[in-house]
Length: 168
Ligand SMILES: CC(C)(COP(=O)(O)OP(=O)(O)OC[C@H]1O[C@@H](n2cnc3c(N)ncnc32)[C@H](O)[C@@H]1OP(=O)(O)O)[C@@H](O)C(=O)NCCC(=O)NCCS
Image (tube, rainbow, N blue to C red; front, side, top):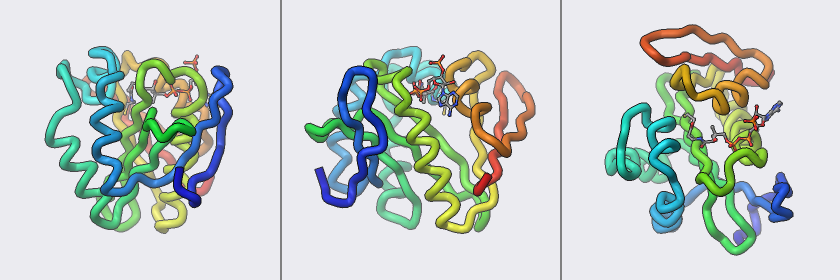
C-alpha cells in the first residue's frame, strides 16, 4: 500500500479499507476487480446488459488517470481493488460521477466513502456541481445519493438524474 493512502473505513468484515487515487499502474487491478462483478452490478452501473466491463470504459478510466481527472480507488490492505469512483469533467465547474463496488464488498459503507472522497476531490478542483445518472430501479445507489445534502433530482427515461452541490 502506498504511503499517501488513507484508512477511512473498517468494514463489518473487520477489514481496513484504504482510499487513494488510481494511477496508471493500477490497470491490472481494475481488470482483476472486474472478475468480481455480477451481471446485475454491471447492468446497474452501465445501464445496459454487458457480460464484462466495456472496453471503452477501461479506455475512459485510463484517459482520466493519465489526464487531469481523478479516479478514487478503495483497496484492501493486501492491495486488491474493491471499488472506485470517477469524475469526468463536463465543463470547468461540472463533473459527472460513476461509482462501482465489487459484489462481495457491497453494502458495507465503501460506496459511501467513495462518494465522500470524490465530492472532496470535486471541491478541491473548484467544481460547483457533480451529476450522476442512476437507473430508477437502482435502489441502493439512490439511497446512497439521497443521504447527501444539496441533492436535486429529476426523472427522465428510466433514469434519475442527480445534481449534487459541491461543498454542502
Ligand atoms: C451502488 C453502490 C456503488 C453502493 O456502494 P455500496 O458500498 O454497496 O454502498 P454502501 O455500503 O456505502 O451503502 C449502502 C447502504 O448504506 C446507506 N448509506 C451509505 N452512506 C450513508 C449515509 N451517509 N447516510 C445514510 N445512509 C447511508 C445506503 O443508503 C445503503 O443502504 P442499504 O445497505 O440498505 O442498501 C454499489 O452497491 C454498486 O457498485 N452497485 C452496482 C453498480 C451501481 O449501481 N453503481 C451506481 C450507478 S453509477
